[in-house]
Every structure is written in structure tokens, then in C-alpha cells.
Amino acid sequence: MTEPVIDLKHLQKTFGQQTVLADVTLQIAPGEILGLIGPSGAGKSTVIKTALGMEVADGGEARVLQTHMPNRQLLGRIGYMAQEDALYEALTGAENLRFFGRMKGVKKAVLAADIAHVAAVVDLTADLEKPVAGYSGGMKRRLSLAIALLGAPELLILDEPTVGIDPALRRKIWSELHQLRDEGRGILITTHVMDEAELVDHVALLLGGKLMAYGTPAALETQYAVDSIEAVFLKAEGVA
Ligand SMILES: Nc1ncnc2c1ncn2[C@@H]1O[C@H](COP(=O)(O)OP(=O)(O)OP(=O)(O)O)[C@@H](O)[C@H]1O
Image (cartoon, rainbow, N blue to C red; front, side, top):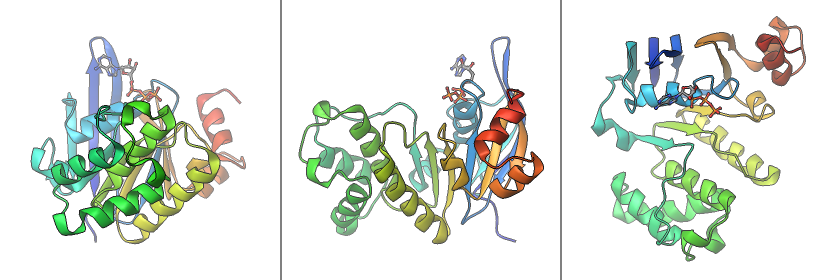
């Protein structure tokens, strides 16, 4: 059996009196896209941050790429896109990509071609020589996504990557994610766009600090007797 790229067992995380993750167990295999959904504040970013060791778990275990987390060396093998953009505003898009590419250890000989590829995926080719300070919010998200894609990492962890991105480009980005998945990479993605949750291999619904539902989009729709992931979400939350 292939080893999972993410293996979370009974993860727990408390902030003060607030238990955000009560007991989260989930796995992602190579060649799989897992969509983590849940209402705002459910703890999706906290799952990601504890998995990556950016927050210390209060219980349970997080293994990423077969390594117990936290582990700094591993970060070069993971394409992580946080919810907040962390870009150098005074530098151009191209300079940001070159800087982060080198940080991630992308070989000099392939860096220029890799930058051209990821910039094209997010439709930023024409804006690469402009300073990031003049980018719109959506352009900054796209640059952050391009940075995460650099070096074709084994594991992509994308926290709401398509916020502020228009539908046509979103479709192009999903086609790239599917291609990376088909090449055997594992992808963890959080989203508030319920149509996007139809495009993943497995959906995990986080509610009350636990995974309340898990399965393929089709299996969940059957289980909840509805015809969309949005309806699954509403029914699980008790709204519908
Ligand atoms: N560093 C922190 N200190 C204290 N509380 C925190 C911290 N990080 C997160 N929280 C709390 O944990 C809860 C879950 O936050 P988290 O950002 O993981 O949710 P989310 O599901 O990603 O939300 P959204 O969909 O709005 O991004 C929230 O109530 C938040 O206020």
C-alpha cells in the first residue's frame, strides 16, 4: 500500500478555553485531492497549521510525507499557500517567484521555465515585471498560488486558494490541480466555494471540532439524499 502524504491521527487543538479540534483523523494518499470544508471558524486553517507544525497540537499525531511534524527540512517539499498572502510588496512578481523558488531549492537551470509555467497557470505572465504593491487582491492571491506551485512539490496544501479569482481562471487552476493529482501528488485544499468541493476526490466536512462527514462527493450526496455538496453542507449543519 502507498504511504499517505498526510496522516493525521486524533489531532486535538485548544486555544484557551476553546477546543477547536476535538478529534481529527484523516489521511491523504498520493494522487488524491482532499477538500476540507466547514463553516467559518470551524478550524480548517487550524488543521493545516497543526499538521504543518505551525501550531503545536495538544494531542494526537501529525505525519506529513512519512515524517513526524514539525520538521523544518520537509517544508521545501510542500507547496503551502496560507490564507494571508506573505509577499514582498516592493519586489516584482517575477522577483518574488525567483526568491521563493530559490528558497524552495528549485534548481537554477529549471527555475526560469518553472516560473514561466506557474505564472501562466495563474494568468500573471503580463504582470510579472510590475511591483506587487500595485497588484489587486486577486492578483496577490494568484501570485501566492504560483509560489506554492513552484517546484511541483509532492504535497500541496492550499488554504482557500481561489478567493477573489474569477470563474474562468478558477477553471484553469482546477485543471492544473487535477493534472498535478494525476501525476501522483497529494493535495489538501480548503474552500468556501461549494462547486469546487464537487471537483475533489474526497470531501471532509469539519464541524464541532470533528469530521462530521467524509467521502467522495457522490457518496456524500447519496448518504445525505441531496444533489450537491452545498446541500450536504447545509444538511449536516442542520440549516436545511
Ligand atoms: N492563534 C490563535 N489564537 C486563538 N484562537 C485562534 C487562533 N487561531 C485560530 N483561533 C480560533 O480557532 C477557531 C478556528 O479558526 P480557523 O482559522 O482554523 O477556522 P477556519 O475554519 O479556517 O475559518 P475560515 O473558514 O473563516 O477561514 C476560530 O474560532 C479562531 O478564532
